[in-house]
Structures are given as structure tokens and as C-alpha cells.
Length: 344
Image 1 (cartoon, helix red, strand yellow):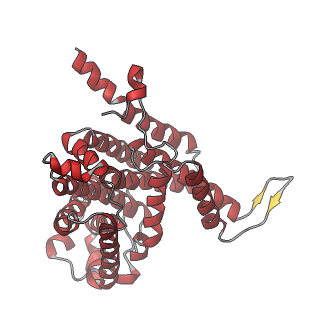
Image 2 (image 1 turned 180 degrees about the horizontal axis):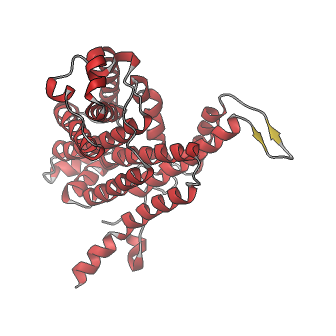
Image 3 (image 1 turned 60 degrees about the vertical axis):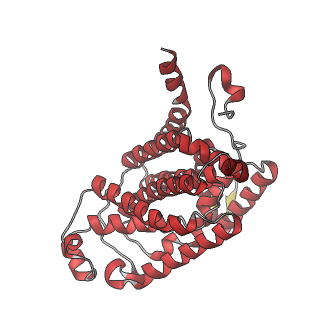
């Protein structure tokens, strides 16, 4: 009986995070089309940040190239869901079995995640041997390569013009369902043996190797899981945005998602969730102010560029006050062992 209760208690933190995401999204969904789009993009960003945490947060290796997997997932889903008639006119370089295929949203999203994971598995062999600055620079190279390849494969990706006429199948409900699945998947992984070994190697790589931990193997597992989840986020993005260009997966989204992770607290799943919610809310508020705001008594004129400047100042203030992020790198804890929640 006690093991069952302990297992159920262990699921309370991801359940609480999932409930927080769902409740906030449903409360904010007032029926406005513009707000609905913003909420969906915010939930997609949350999935991407949770996926990013599963590698960066657990391994301690900062990656600037994970948006490459978002691009892989987005383009894979777009190609699989676009009608074959449209593909025959624009994407003449596709293999026949892909050119003639048109899948529904769920299988296309799953396949997109698997494709991103397979790409990560191939890249893990050279990349997972690196650490620190070398690993960061290598992932920057990965981002640059993906951007150039997507922009030049005209007959497969549409080149710099991108893809259009992608079916809009992503809804707030489907995005929330994937977000909940991502939160539980990453929580389960970080409490698994591989996840615990990975966290141990993050704190002290030398000591981890001395007790026989294969750091490269555990990083590879996290790298593939991270790529799968981010690929799923890319697929959801593509099937809501309805058009894709390589620039959508480049520098700006890379630093935005990393900022969400760092602001929330990059060493905890709670930090990934809270950071993505907080930055998304602040960004949307600044966008409204940037376009001009009339409060009756006070009128604020349009201020182009306010969103970027305000977001930068907000992140700077948070990091000065909370260098470890809003959550301090701690997970949610319940019950009598709250004070020792991170000891595991």
C-alpha cells in the first residue's frame, strides 16, 4: 500500500504543473480569436521549453541548436499533412510515398517527433562528447546548418519562400493535451535511473565517471527525448501557423526559449513551466502597450520596439534579483517531505 501511495504522491508535482497550465489557459481564453492564437503559441512555446529542459536543465549543457529539431518537426508535419495536389505543384523533390501521402494531425505529429528524435540520435554521436563552451559552439553550428539547408532545398522545403497552405489542425485543446503529456514524460524521465545519473553528472562529471556513469549515453537519451518533444512542438506550430519559413526557427526563437528556461530556473521542470508562462504573459502585455493603449484617463502612444526592450529589461531585473530563476531551480513539493524535496 505504501509504495502505491508514494508513487501517487510522486505524481503530484507534474499534476499540479499540468493543472496550472490548463487552468490558466482556460481562464485566459475569452473567445477572442487574437487571444486564442496567442494562447496556442504560448502553449507550443511551453512544450518546446519543457523539451529544452529535458536536455539543457538535466545535463547542464547549454544548447543553441535545439530549434533545428523544432524546424525538422514543423517541416515534417507540414509535408505529411499538406494535400498531395498542393505538394505536386511546389515540392517536386519529395519521394513518391511522401508526395502522395496526406496524414491526419495525430500521426503526423508523432512521426514529426520521431523524425526529429532520429536526427538527434545521429547527431548525438559527435555532439555528446563535448561539454562547456565547445558544446555550445557546436550547437550554434547545428542551428546555422539547419537554417542554410532549409533555405536552399527549394524542391523539398520550399526554400526561403517556405511552405504555405498547411492545414490548420492545432487547437488549444490538442496543444494543452500535448503540454500535459510533455510535462509528465519529462518528470518521469528525470526521476528515472538515467535522469538521476544525468543530474549527478551535471553536478560533478569527474565523480560521476569515477563511479562508472556513462555520461555520453545518458546525455544521448536526454538529447533524443528533448528532440522528440521539441519536434512535436514544431509540428503543432506548423499546423496552426499554416505557413513556414526558415527564419521562424532561427536566432530569435532560440534566445526566447532559452530565456524562458533561465528566467524560470533551468534546473527544475517547474522552472521551465513557470518561466514560459511568465515570459509569454509579459511579452503579450508589452505588445499591447507597444501598439498604443488608451485607458481613458491616460493614453499611451505607440512605441515601436518596446516589446524587445521591455522584455530585455524584465529579464535583467529578474536575473539580478533571482540569479537561479524564479523557482530557484526547485521543484514543487507536497507533504511532510517538502523541505527535502530536492534531495532525491
